[in-house]
Length: 483
Ligand SMILES: Cc1cc2nc3c(=O)[nH]c(=O)nc-3n(C[C@H](O)[C@H](O)[C@H](O)COP(=O)(O)OP(=O)(O)OC[C@H]3O[C@@H](n4cnc5c(N)ncnc54)[C@H](O)[C@@H]3O)c2cc1C
Image (cartoon, rainbow, N blue to C red; front, top):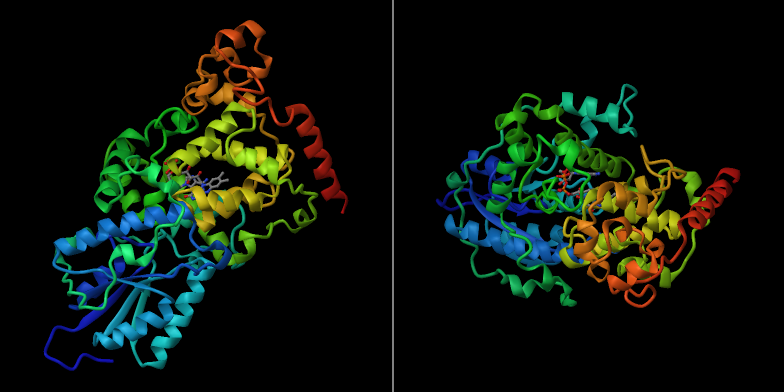
């Protein structure tokens, strides 16, 4: 539907998980084509089915949109908010507004791909032009394949190849040149979209996160000097800020991985090795996860190593609940689960430990853990979450072998030796000396008494003994081998 009036030609730009104005390829392309931009966000609460956005992500999304609305208003535009299936709403909106072309970012997850396929058909049926771009990853998944043209399933060769084919485009930071149109009368207020979940546990997150594109930009500016140089030695210590905490900003596209890479390649002492730093390799794990999900969409629910379908998992709601609430009796596990519940985020080392505990010490299916993380993480990302859980359960691509079972108190003594992390999140045992903070059950009675800890009352006894759990997990694994 071409614009027949003398007004400037218009583009509908559909925001998805790219909620930013800088380095947004859709905005740049529309702007370079001389089009006036009508920005729109469509909330479809059921997209994704059982993996429809979780509660913590919805809170993050709501706050990101609040900030995006203001940023667009400052440039004279209005973000149109709609609720429903994007493939039905966008073609109608484009028709109603006399739009010349529709621009959007490509999704690589199963539900996002289905939506864009349907949208493209609907636009084609109406004879409307559209363009879609990679706006969320360094490389599009189909562009990084092994010598046989197949997807990589091992990280190291994947990343070696991926690094060599990243398109060399500089991020575009010229948001002031964007020409936004007003949205007209047919838009909703943010409060009318019901993006926020009914259950208001997210309220406690307020004040713990600064959610805006400009906050993401400031965070990224500090990464080359504050995080990258000591990343190798500090990234595993959960009590300090040794990692960037950029994940929720990347998950909703308030910043692009390309901007992060460009910042590291041009600033601070890390710039010489930019792409080869350990920090950027972690962005590589994000890319690796996304390409796995693209090629193996069943990995959200189904183990990539098929023999693990036979694993003799236990269904135990009570044990699952203790794990979810941080009441396992292992301080490091409980600290992680409580950090997640209170802040919507958990340190990566601790994610690995709590995940291992669920699938190995408790023998509860990894899918249960993935579901809980999906609801509670502000950085919930279907690719990284599915990959992280399959890795922890030993059934994924390039996974930790199942027989390698983390010792939950040994990990505490190694990575939280002074007990700062455990004390912060499990304050009821906070007065125990360092020696006992990660295994209070071994503490002499007088130490427990002077720290005012009554095990089983103030803090639980371990819900399963480590040696017993280890033996049970290995026996379960042996059954898988036999089938
Ligand atoms: C069981 C499990 C579930 C996970 N679920 C998610 C999830 O839903 N969303 C998510 O973004 N990450 C997930 N991760 C990966 C990782 O824990 C987080 O990305 C990281 O803790 C985020 O903190 P950060 O931004 O400070 O990371 P940094 O150490 O500063 O790393 C920089 C960025 O690299 C990426 N990254 C780092 N580690 C990984 C990794 N192992 N896999 C994929 N990307 C990585 C993230 O985008 C991160 O923001 C999961 C890991 C595990 C073990």
